[in-house]
Length: 145
Image 1 (tube, rainbow, N blue to C red):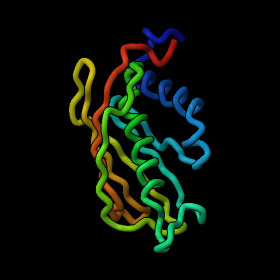
Image 2 (cartoon, rainbow, N blue to C red):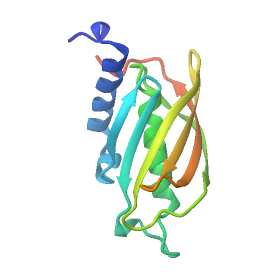
Image 3 (cartoon, rainbow, N blue to C red):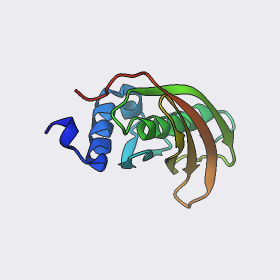
Image 4 (cartoon, rainbow, N blue to C red):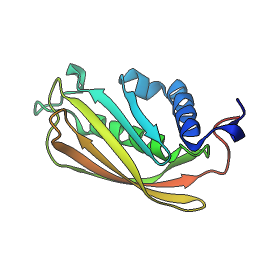
């Protein structure tokens, strides 16, 4: 099916499929796309033993990776190759071994080239683990052919 004939939702889903096929890092961490729609994405990941740092909780780098993946999937839903221009994260509570973390990203604003997105990372009990704000930049090329 031609890209031009896709609905906005179909386009977002197709972009997510292509991104995940190309994203070795997220697949290696066993991240899963739970949902995607124009400007939003929810990605899940289970905290594995190799993700635990010296204080017995999930290393912040893994939490950031999950949040960054949700951010990437949300801002690439429009078939415009979009990258991170900057991100900041606040860790609220520790992730624990066996937790299923869910990163939900939503678009705050999107212009011709830049955008702002907020990500909330929660555990399976709905407790907030971290919040992240990402700034995006569109490179001007299409993700899909």
